[in-house]
Amino acid sequence: MSDKSSDAPDRRAPVIAVDGPAASGKGTIARALARHFHLPHLDTGILYRAVALNLFRFGGDPGSEFEAMRACDLSSVSLDDPELRSEIVGSIASRISAYPAVREKLLDRQRRFAEQEGGAVLDGRDIGTVIAPDADVKLFVTAAVEVRARRRVAELLARGSPAHLEDVIIDLKARDARDSSRSTAPLAQAQDALLLDTSTMDIDDAIAAAIELAEKRLRDSNDRPSPA
Ligand code: CDP
Image (cartoon, rainbow, N blue to C red; front, side):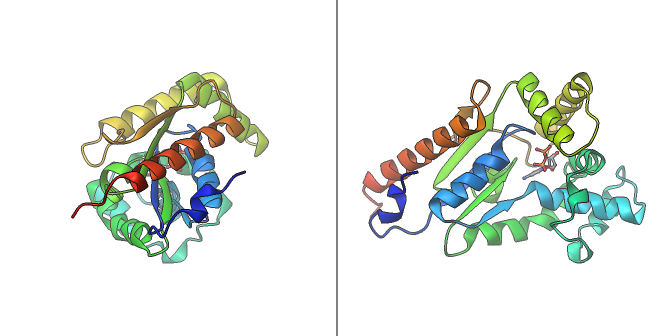
């Protein structure tokens, strides 16, 4: 893999925002971008999943914004807990992430990560719009729902969980609708985000396309004269 970015003239380390719907490949792409540009990476979905797992363990009600907000103290959850990846936790995360009080509680941690000196890659739903609106590169990664569902099924089967394509399609559509229609920080392509539709790409092609888009965006902004 070429690494032209690292010998760019003394430019501050970039912030890269990767947004997109569930199972679009944004997590894998964000991790690959982080490796390529030698940047720290934050999967912001894991924070919402951690709140969901906390709530679940306390026996809290996902229908209560107050109880979900109280589950935002993440001191007793390890972000490496494999339970975070379970379908039940993902489904609770999708519900509690619509609460403004929950989003507000997780905001500072994400902003601090985005603003750290050495640059950063963050992936989520609202990185380019809310968390890091000034990011140097914004990618919006998407794919047709059937394609995303097939990927999610493969992922679940590989983890030993039973999965049925029809059920996963229904679930993804419900998550897309919830993510896009919530009033606070809905899933949306930032106006200056580059669209990457991975419907017909395998993951290696998608990663290569993302790196190319990011490098081009960084080169273009380097070439632009800086404001006086
Ligand atoms: O695996 P999947 O893409 O479904 O979800 P995830 O990225 O792990 O995120 C879990 C849930 O958190 C999603 O259903 C989103 O609704 C929510 N989320 C969010 O609202 N904002 C973010 N920046 C990241 C995730």
